[in-house]
Image 1 (cartoon, helix red, strand yellow):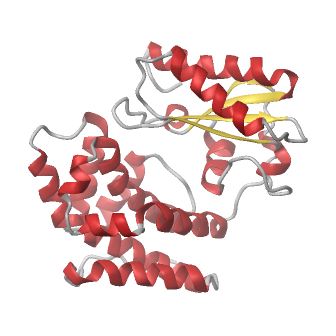
Image 2 (cartoon, rainbow, N blue to C red; image 1 turned 30 degrees about the vertical axis):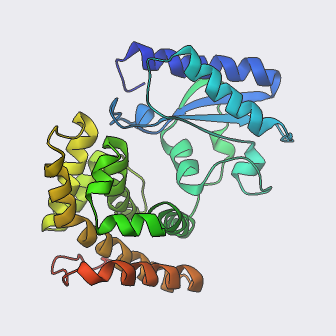
Length: 286
């Protein structure tokens, strides 16, 4: 486990124990995922990601019991403020044979490539890796749903609203596009350190500077002077998203994803009024 924080370790172990207690012999395995498993965990901003594998068939009350596991573990460790995210399902649901559970392609790959077994039997050899196409389509869908809706777009033109929402909100707003670009270019998922450095190495301008600031803020929290954060967002945020959108519009076109392409193009139009034509966009290397 990539942390020395004993309270975080206690919470993680508590999730595993609670899951075993609730699901009994249906709990095949519990994994530690995300930055606690692969490195780069931030006590300021990281989620605590856990994976739970259940025996088939999945049952109607599994989701509510997963929620119960999360709540019980969090209540037992109130000093930990990091969000606890639990991914769950059976081997069949994770492999897409049935539509159930919660294991998006990005997190399925993270489970297969980086997770640490906490308890139970390691079943990762039975899992099917998502294709790069699956990962990129899922990334586009996530971005549209979480980062491209009306309220978010309005914030692009009033970045103080982003700053006011705190470290986690600010840094996720900045770092998600960099991670999606890293995925598209390499076919791999990586922590924020690697994906941010990739962006900084391959782009130049206020957007690259913003990514660098975003990574540091993720580690150390936002500076006390919030105007400094808003200033950097005003300088680099739209160019960062323009670069991300240019890349993913082309990818969705290549995949024949007409609806996603149209939605991404509209998103690009929505942020364009205050955008100067970027000179630093990295052309896809194929």
